[in-house]
Image (tube, rainbow, N blue to C red; front, side, top):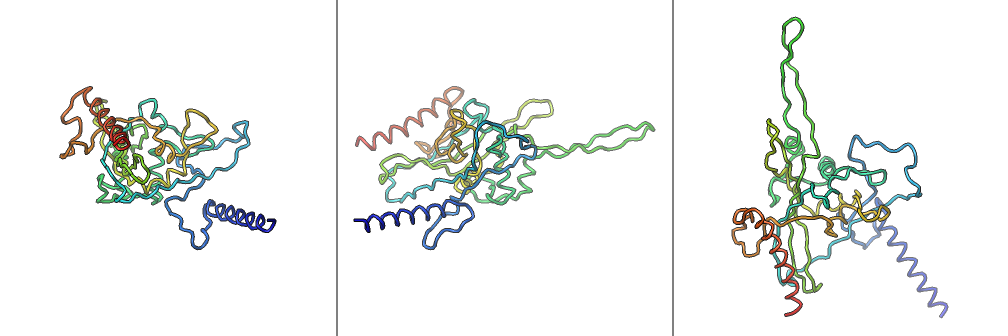
Length: 307
């Protein structure tokens, strides 16, 4: 019995040692262990150039370095899919529940506003921006920055001697102009899991610019990002938790736990032409139609269980 206990203890130690090696960023996994590269995480990074660290310990808790990781998605076989529909939804960052998208970061989370985190990942070559939601044509960093930063203005200034000089006024990107995010996601009933599964496929930030007279223009998409490529970057940055400052969550947790508020723009439910709801509904009926789509998805999952 003692020998058996020793063997069990040795196996437990070996398993713990292996899991520790896999959990450490930058350490290669043991031979025979497959690790998805998109699952890699790490400590928070600083993306906002104006962020400055505190010169004193800002808090009463002795904090430790946190290593955050992506929870891998379970693969879904086509043979296990009983029902699938696609949904497009919009997140308005001006709503109170979505203020996290404007969270500038703190002493521990670093980071910056969510659009700054996305731009940082694009600049570092971690993710690729695309022109459309089907990810058919990639954008270069120069293309992205051209969409973000307005062209410079040129004005004339009169000198004391009566001559004129031309002054170039360069403009900068204002993160507050990003007022919306659009998501493209699949809703799938997996008979292997016995429940409805939602997977975000793509994401697009929308920028809202103003006319010369100060009136707002309709928000337009900047670019599209393939969400599975983005998850590794999301796991490196923490976001504001409205419930508890100790329980720190990452942007990957934020999206996977569906902590945002949104409304449906379009779906493939009884919509063969894939028209936006606003094309056939007006005013408050647009929101009501979006709620009806959510209810249909909920009822579909219920019907799968009942029948």
